[in-house]
Length: 299
Image (cartoon, rainbow, N blue to C red):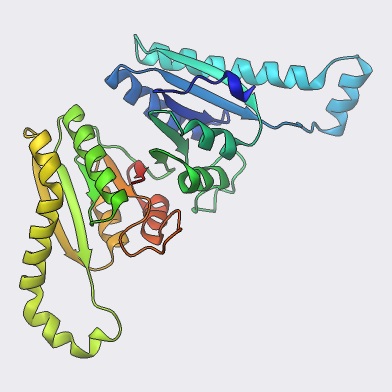
């Protein structure tokens, strides 16, 4: 059934039919409607759904095909989600599909040619006490080939809020800058470019040197960030830009900025990441703690 998915150029969003997943679907539908592109809502069903013993016995007794009924019920759920989004966003080109397989695998495959893939932070069965990313969203953000949007339980989008983007000179961050400016122009909001610096344990012994040169470090990094933004500033001259160079850990600076953001954009792996690392520690932390939807890009 995977081959039937038409994902090219679409916003693809995964759902498990839960109220929590509806938050991600609504975000994806709003973006698709605003940009005039198609939305595909995907319900990924287990390849071997296991019913309770009572249900299974009843199905067998009446000679029914449990798997067929299970898939039909899933299709009814996804169709209902699609109809709700069409009613909420008139003119939205939306379809819903049920496929069998692993949710993380199906959505990661979709990211190869989709405009972007959107996932919620947790599925229907995740413990409420657990704030870390669920398995599906974590896996998709780690292995996707294109932009992935994670809409967490604590994400509160501010429609008129700025687009916050983490900036360094890594290829992934450069892709994040491009996407951030495009999103900001579409929304009619500013870009806030965040860069941070800190000294390590060894440098703490010479903290007075850093204290004397904080202004110089901040000035140099501000100039560097401005150079990294130059191409997109020229391409989007009507987008206001604010540069924030913050002393401290980058993940903390980005999470703090996300509290006022419409969306937060980060590269999958920053300049300091190990070669071959798919998702850096900063990106993981922002995905878990950000107060806005987060887009992860790759170089």
